[in-house]
Amino acid sequence: MALNPYTFLLTLEKRAGFTDEDKALLQANADWGVKVAPAMTNHFYAYLGRDEEMNKILHTGEERIHRLHETFIQWFQEMFTGIDNWGPAYADRRWKIGLVHVRIGIGPQHVVPAMATVIHEVAKELQVEGQSEALKDSLSRICMIDLAFIEQAYVEVSSAAVLQETGWTEGLFRRLIATGARSM
Image 1 (cartoon, rainbow, N blue to C red):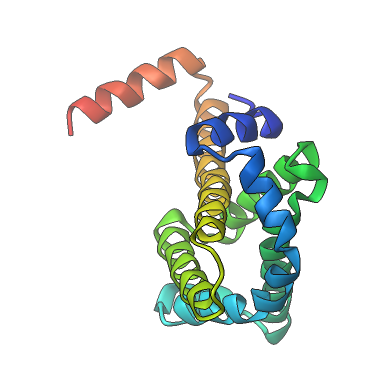
Image 2 (cartoon, rainbow, N blue to C red):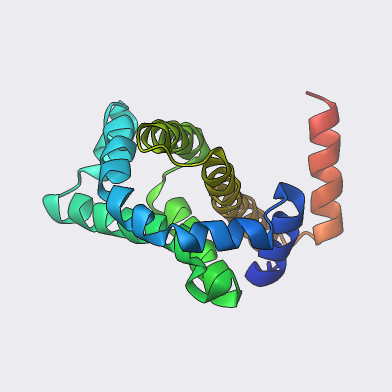
């Protein structure tokens, strides 16, 4: 079940309809991304901070929340630059971000609505500044791709842990999951 991050990224680009035009539009607006990244960071962490469980995870020390803010700003800006034009380095970084979410316990039930908050706030900012709807759409597509990396990290880590602990084959594991899903 080992995931190749770049292959996964290419699959997600096709599924999300993330095109070369989207990439060019994001790169052309990278300065805008730098400008609004701190405000989007504040919206993201304000949202998460209102959740008691997330607030505990986020505030294990002043140093952690500061690092998380810096990391979010970098992540946000990278969506506009693509690091290496949305190549292997971009995919590897997104995969590592997903693994960090798993490690510190920020689950999909927290990340998905927080990402929706970011997209909503970006849309408001784009409207205020008279930016194009196309930029919002391109940014929404790459946000969903990045979100899929986080969600897939949970699947991969959970699956690998079960296979390692039980000694089951991947085929047996998949059959058990399918059987369990049918019985619910």
